[in-house]
Image 1 (cartoon, rainbow, N blue to C red):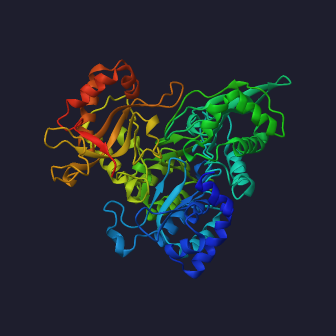
Image 2 (cartoon, rainbow, N blue to C red; image 1 turned 30 degrees about the vertical axis):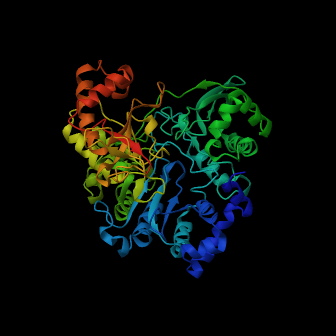
Image 3 (cartoon, rainbow, N blue to C red; image 1 turned 135 degrees about the vertical axis):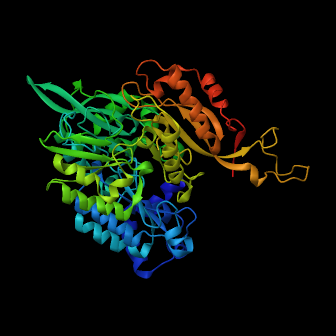
Length: 580
């Protein structure tokens, strides 16, 4: 049994919630918390939705779960106000100047439709929870080895491309697992997605469990429900989900998800943290055996598959769109890398109330953008004139529209490179510098600060994975010298060590789903934009009619792609990854 499993046996991880209240009441420091509860407490705190910041001792990142991405205006306003009041950078870390783009009070919309805030102190957590309780929000199990936030289509109930509105099922499944001690200690995180949308924008192909729309004939009558995909995921060992021969009626969805969690709980690996995710269990058993194990544990009979209704993949909802309700629209705002001010998010919530109907909502999307819904068409122009909307307009360039970034080294313990500012700067610069074909609405450019894939680089047109890179500045071998080098020189010259990244091309989800190829490794960050300029020049010259960028990248040999990149006036291939 690995160390994390031992910590979870010492104390049930959900018990940490009451411990947090005591730590807050007593005003304990990080050292005092560890002295009282041991080193395993930092792992258990994840069940409260809390991660300690990388190098900022005494502060937490706190994650708010938003099932299906659905927020009422009241909920969204409270999130923004909490950020302004409790998630501000202290003076010793720069205060208002902590971040030169976003100041000291901002939030991050994640690829799992969560909201993350930074600079939270433990003594403020009970007050945050109290504010959240008033509007039905929670941080419980935002992290940790249990059911994470349940994904759904951000346009559920709005678009005519859905077979049925699955948001009630998302809510029911989320409510069942949140705070459920029986399923709060799984071998690893358990990621679910549930949608009635034919475009699979909730990304069933890369989740542990995906329920997607289907139709089944029963007693001569057509019923709508779900088909099932299991065992998808990214990070190390990426895997596309496998189909099961199962049809799940909506009324049985909670029980089915419980049975899957039970199977994972009983059969999943609790020894090696590197291979204990559910996708490894599906791979080991095979989809048929895994399905049989689920059926053995399910208390309802599960029909076999019917007709699959998924037609493709739509990665975003940016823009002004007609709802299926006559006279209403929803507006998808573009938030590059998902980061915006808490005050701006609160303004968006108030604007939803002002310009929308009583059914107006804020919806978070898996591409780190957000929607304002139920806006009468005559109010759209006034909504877009609001101050918050000026930086998040619904008509961005293709690189801004597809830009996704993880937390990065600014706050994450695992982050190797800075991501948020870099993604925003690069996206806007690329929109200015590169003339893309008119029919190319989006270029999905995803940047992860390490190999953990929180920004989902493997499914992007262009994916980056952070590295520390030693640059060959002398025209000689860039291999780092050993620590006992007899030349008397330092093993590394600090001036030669830069932020860089592995450079991947050609990923996508949908009917032609495929993970990208890591075409070039250890590219210095300064060389990336020149390399992209050369790639898009070649793409514009060589693309077939209507060929999207990721399709072109797959058609062109990787060696040729590397050759194109090397033509850039930049050290694309002059670095090697180093441990730092």
